[in-house]
Image (cartoon, rainbow, N blue to C red; front, side, top):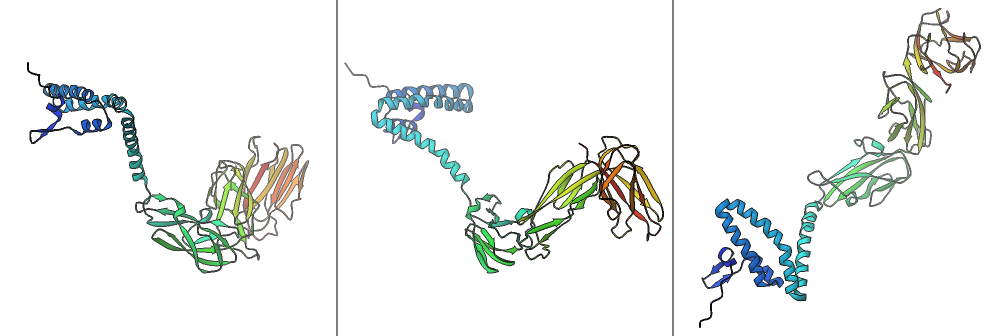
Length: 396
């Protein structure tokens, strides 16, 4: 009786190559599973079934669809093959499977780290303090420590961590400079610093201009949706000298009433708001009133709380308007500061403080209807008076 020869593995027909027609060379999945300790019979059964089915599908459906089916089913079989390696391979097999899974999990991490790694610095871009222009250097209006704003960019313009930049003093007025870019102005003047990141290095000028006081007009009067004005202020150094080179920060409390464009204020809807201007170690508040333009003060509605009427008087003429009941603020604003000051008087149950005469603005308490204000261009005046009379209701 002859012993039957064992049937060659089914996987050989479709997946194995033969070397010199004697030694079968197993494909890499089978070799990997054998290394992990999987049962060869189980591996042959699973992969053999897949290989045979793939061959049949290639005849019926074509190569592409058969390969797609094979890839999907092979992926679904991976957990079963690995679990067989864990059970059949013992402790060493389990360690090999764990090592394989850890290696596969590390691949995406390594790829992401490779893609996200920082490129070498290629450029340094400096930013002015409080939004100031950097063209003439970095302006510092304080003697307190300030960190320089520097952007480190790679060759593609992508930002890099700012901590890669290093700084040192080169020349000019003495200045405290840390390697991380914190500078302290000790006196008035200019200094040159060197900034570097990797192989990139450049210089920048720091202009120390300490400011200790900011002064300006207390109140700005604008017409709703009209022409804007620059915020009137003066920055002064510790010795009282006017400092024209400033790095400022301005904020408006109610942007519906006025909108900031640098230090230029554009009026919006009628109302009152406050603009805060900070320069160095000083700050000033400017109150802003935006008035609704009207042709006259006659017939004002209760909801018209801030109005402004035009005044144009030739020599020896006057204009008279009624005043609404309540607490009011009246202010005449001339078109030009060089023109004559009008004469203003009130009549009726009304008290104004300070009294009109040397001043063209006052707070008035109108106690009953029938009161009025008269604006006159005296006969002794030198020319025409033109401007606007603003009225603001102060009652809640």
